Length: 246
Ligand code: IPE
Ligand code: IPE
Ligand code: MG
Image 1 (cartoon, protein in one colour):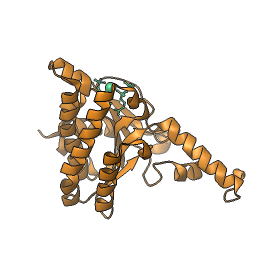
Image 2 (tube, helix red, strand yellow):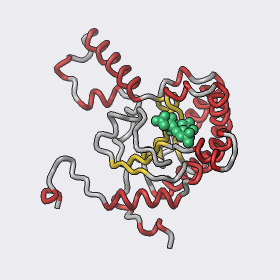
Image 3 (cartoon, rainbow, N blue to C red):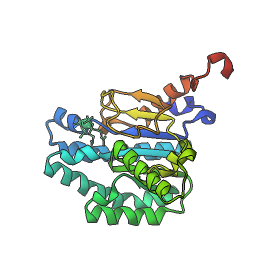
Image 4 (spheres, rainbow, N blue to C red):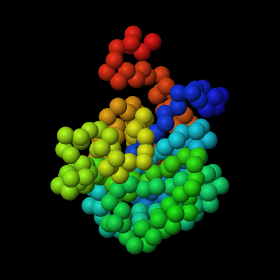
């Protein structure tokens, strides 16, 4: 049976974030270069985006490249950047056809010019789309994001735009890269690693965490459905007691 039918449409996670991990190990298992793992990972991106849009998930955020990933061998970084440009070029039509809006979070100024211009072209082309917001985390680091937020807010305090007594969760939310997104409900990490790797630290405060040993290039729609079904079995108490919820 298709697992899709087991999903309750009324309690879908509104925001799913994914740490797409395991491309390198997938390639190694097949005796291939890491680049092939990354290339095959793009198929899983397509599957995940399609599945989320079909279900009616409002926000999907994909961790594609971290601030720490700049420390990888130069050739691998180059491959990943090339792959990004070609994927953006190839997918713009699918995004348009499916009414999906693309956005990006991270220190985008550090991206190579070609990636940056291709990215903003697709963001511009898809900006009026309303079915789902797909966000790519690129050159993204959560600590860097928090540092930027603190800097922006303290500048506003200095210029009397915000008073320090009024700083609250919503002011912080408004200054994060994710300011236009909902809180993360479900965080998925593939490849068996059980860590956050500097991803959305503030935003996952109350997210349900889901770890699977499936390597990213093997991740399909069915794996996403499994994650959502598991999410729907959990009781999200937000600090309350079980009795209070029912
Ligand atoms: C995820 O796969 C892709 C990126 C981090 C860009 P990895 O490249 O980290 O794959 P492993 O973890 O080495 O298997
Ligand atoms: C996290 O994966 C970053 C992305 C998936 C883009 P990594 O493979 O870089 O994380 P670590 O180094 O294993 O924590
Ligand atoms: Mg990895």
